[in-house]
Image (cartoon, rainbow, N blue to C red; front, side):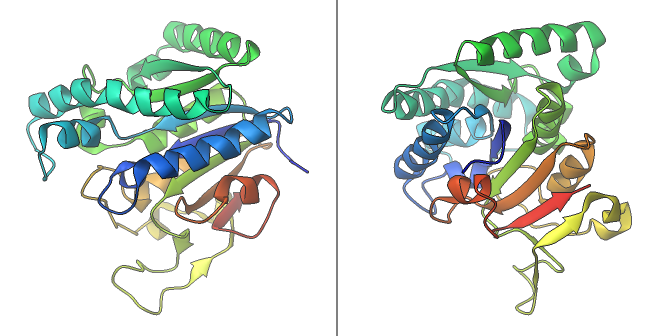
Length: 256
């Protein structure tokens, strides 16, 4: 039994790189889980990273550049590959998708926010899955600092989702950085109110993205609705979306 009616799934850059696993198989698996749940009445919005890393793959650039213009060019090259991947995977399960590119400015400007909300709401009402990415070609600070984690939280509030899932390459929120501490312990449940800025110190960043765990925890704090649950979990775990939707004990669950 699925316990959520409206879900935002954020997929990080590290999960969309062939460095660690077969991305096509990963996306196919995630899209199948979403499609199966959608058939049972759950609405979905996807927030995806990966345009820049896809551009790197196309041009065979191993290390992420630092120049803003080069990053924006890579995003323009990679975005169509990224969307083609999602579109093909969802077509296998008779689901339609829509591409939406946003910036933080869009979300912070009242008129543009309301327009985005109306458009995304209409797309969802037509049974189509919105796939949202940062508009990296025109964004500036977002590329340098940050992060589709924050965008995912904004979208969660915009669509009034009752669940935000952040899929990453870590199993969840640990008391220490597990990359540096072998004794790090996974925190399975956490009250959002307990996330003080002083405790948000984990830094582990992917070489493919700009956000670390710090941005993920800030994103969780931004999902201010009393009806929203947030989960940070590993996208590598088998049937991870299905498990979260059925309230299995995976990753870290954040609640208010």
